[in-house]
Image (cartoon, rainbow, N blue to C red; front, side, top):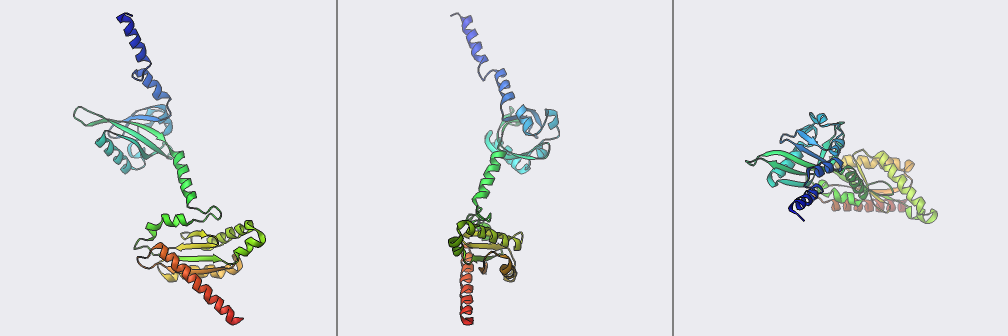
Length: 295
């Protein structure tokens, strides 16, 4: 093989490698990831079709006035990305929210690299975006499902645990009502668990109708619920409790016991719940004693 033939082979190999400009251009035009080149000030200089589609633009010209704070939802988050790129030279899969031309918001993972000048200054940013909005939505739905009771739609104990830091803030004033259904076991035994489940659902709906919008209903398990109420005084909490007791005989599917506790300074969530349960037991004991005396 002559030197001329060797050069022809090398030329053919270059034609089918990623080093060839045509190959890179073809790739950028067809991939689903959005790619862009932007000035340090944030103006988009060039972008591939996927990027334009991602942000709802028909051409680069459409992005002339849609850059910087208009493109990126959080300017602080964008500044954080650019600071990391300036420090490291590149950043991989940085989560950030972008605003489309129609105002809707998408979540993307951005890989970004800086082009530096001869003196080390940033001349341009090269970025690749992956739209993860759908994945993010599914993750948020799964997270929501994990803290919900599937039968009643109320929150569950995982939710209480997730809110522990907030509930245990020194300045957080709140109270807890413990609600315990009477006779659910008999319903299950006589009519089946499906009927018992319907009773639980109806009871949850009863409480929801009479609680405030900001109050949080939690199914602790079995026939026991907790209503977390943000109030400034124990008296405000007792007003909510009395409302439930007043409407219970006519509207609740079963009779129920109620105990309550108001959080003391520095008290843990576990202790507030425990005191509410203690109050429930004490109330039941007083009711039983009253019934014996009246018998």
